[in-house]
Image (tube, rainbow, N blue to C red):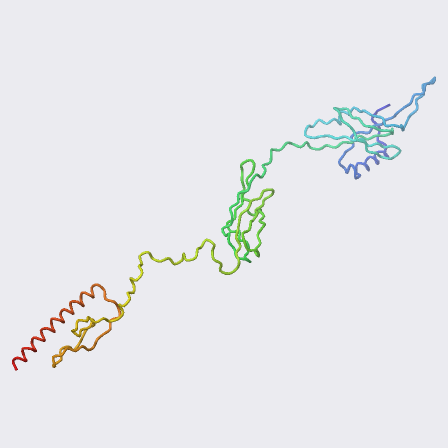
Length: 309
């Protein structure tokens, strides 16, 4: 087999360019070199005649040494090689295997070949990207609702915690699910950010005034322990009582006493509706005593006048 750099035939160049621009290579490869691979069969005769073979029944492995100008010397790129075979004007793309500077491929046609290559940047290792490990959720201020009320997120705070110990506020990016304003009862609200979720509870009550389950009946008005039964109103203290001593005196103030006939009369009696207090009782008793003494003095005077007559 003869391997040598071939001259670029116009038809071959056009075929290679069309292949490079086609759907398979999509202009990602560039021309490197043209090779002319010829296979000969030697006929043993007087002249050792050589006969060119253009096709074989089975594929033959071809090994090439890369031209120096096509060896990749830049470690920041990876270079990949392919072979475009032009046989009878028809192009074919052949895969290659690179070992060092040796390039191998298989073919069963022998004519013009174009060596093309592609340079791709080497992927540089990047530092580990922190991953989300936890969410810290501060529930909203309002956690009790009436049926029909929308969820109020005032006070809600969501903080993302990452594997490197850093954190960030993601309240605006968090997604809340699980609230149903038309369903009464305790509801679980789920806060989600990326692959992490946390929950908090709210209560939705029926419309109308419902007693708070924490309130117990009768606890609003408690009796004062200092109040004793019967101290405000004493039975029988609203009515006037007579002294019952036969003197014709009442507990009320009495006017126009001691008429000229010598008999004692009471008039202008006033009714006292309130029960006397301690100080009032003492005054009444003193007044009664004075009235008794005055009545006795009047009796003595009348008796003396009768004797004089």
